[in-house]
Length: 267
Image (cartoon, rainbow, N blue to C red; front, side, top):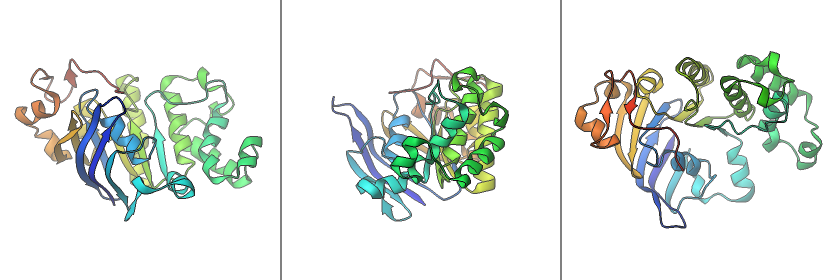
């Protein structure tokens, strides 16, 4: 169980990215985070795995407050939380294989990592991860030779190398066309169902939310303004919609086409 209690993040310039956010994520959930650009979605995910430090609040995972961890305790925790990024975050000039192996760095002594000397078990795990993502035939190509959808599958394979209990996906399909978006989300859904990995994923289009999410939270200006199930999001009222997206937002195609006038990504 992940439990967020009174989470607040104020950046050095005074920007309040999150304000007193509270929610729970049961193990094995596929939770989707929705909201406009700048609503705090990316900040929330990055606080959970401590890429950035929260200003106040608790991030309780199986009873341990991740917000308080330091040093080896923090590194050990991060082993079990995979991260998938909107812009893939790959080493472009390196091979797909090496990018995937990078997901194992947290389990290897520094000297082995620097020399690229991983165990036979790690190499076998990399092959299995790439095979699951359908990119084994791309293993020795440079990452920048791949399409956007293929690069994102590399990112998921890299996260899978961590043997994660949780995957945080920050707008993972924002730069992909609709067909590729479904393909990437289906991979995450499969890991969620087959491996029992908890997935917390920020998404931008409500048709994807209702298709893949088992639960949903909505952020607006850093505050939690909506919580619901997959069925709840299908029955979202105009009032609830505007609470999340603002009075100027318009629904298109009864949740099938997204949100008029919004764009993916945020600081």
